[in-house]
Length: 281
Image 1 (cartoon, rainbow, N blue to C red):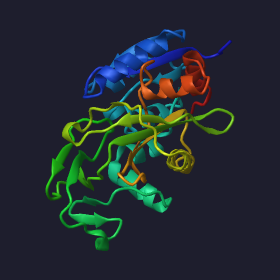
Image 2 (image 1 turned 180 degrees about the vertical axis):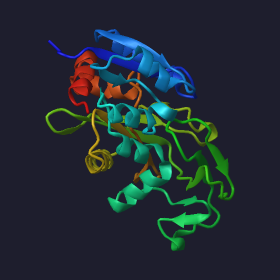
Image 3 (image 1 turned 30 degrees about the vertical axis):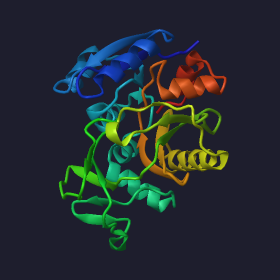
Image 4 (image 1 turned 90 degrees about the vertical axis):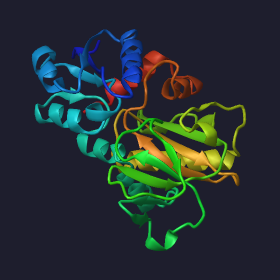
């Protein structure tokens, strides 16, 4: 019997609000918990007024304040226990430039990119004649992606070299008696509809999947991540994987990648939620 009351936090605003609501509803179907729905303008006040001082907070929050470390810092400063990673780790994962710098430090291939007009990982990796994907600097998800002919210098976006390829691989990692990578989820990818991906019947080479799994585990470990993380890779036309982002709060809905991967590993949805709760701050 769990000693602490569980309180689920979800955010009602932002481009990922629907995922947050779905995560909260599905998690609440297997966990005895109260749910508090937060808004961008007064989430601190809502927690102060309606939160439980001795509760264990399950963060079904995706995007914005609920994923970029602000909510985590608020809870940690008050000694309140929460699921998922600590604020400092979430701040890195929410920032695509800082995440890609971590990939470089870990020797994990990632597409070359530009941020504020500077080429990374080094100035000599300029790529002439290629296309670029313009992405918001902060936040995860597949929203607001644009293909550009040339990189810009907007400080609120990064410009990542477009890697031709028809597949993406997502690897979810959980802490369950150690760092455990769940079976990879392979999805199709289209240049014409970036962000709109669906599960693929085409499976990459086993060695390619092994590289993705190893890289996702390395990122999770380097960040001392808790609960669950999800690292996404694009597979180019030669079968080479490139890490593109790591999600500190992957969607927890039953139909989403995390639950799908857990099921393939033999872990029930209820067991997945318990594993996330057990590995809390």
